[in-house]
Image (cartoon, rainbow, N blue to C red; front, side):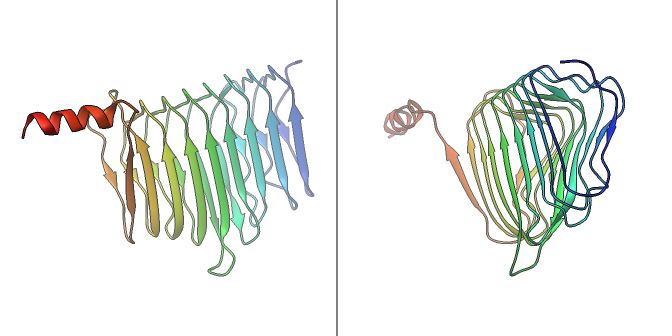
Length: 224
């Protein structure tokens, strides 16, 4: 696809759909002036050359989809609110040169929905921050995650976070406040990971490989 210059969108509902191998020469993809729902979809192999994706207009629903093997920078989706979902999908082997921040403040009766899907082999060279108040956050991350910063959950609400196998998280995995559930696979890549649940009642589930329960049972039997 022909390389594009920076793109700043004005008021109203905004949408950009690009095919495979989209290239941004300079600047950012900026949806911050949107006054209606905003969406961005990039196909496989996109390269933003360090350009950020900005979707932080207050009270606006945002949808962001990044195709497999793309290279991006910072993602800011901080405009959520009641009835203003913040939806993020990253394909397999996406590399983010910086971090991801998603936030929004719903109400107790009408929470901000934050569905996040991240594929296999994704690298984030920063933190993943899913902040906000009165949110319902559903996160599904595939195998082989490399996260160079922390994972930080919302200040209130409920979160369901699922992380596959063979992950490496350099910072703390902090679910934040609220009643949260973490389901996480085993890994040989990270021997010093720290998980904290924050305030609220939290649930931790360890997802074992199919052969591991038998190995644990055999080890327990061997020790009497």
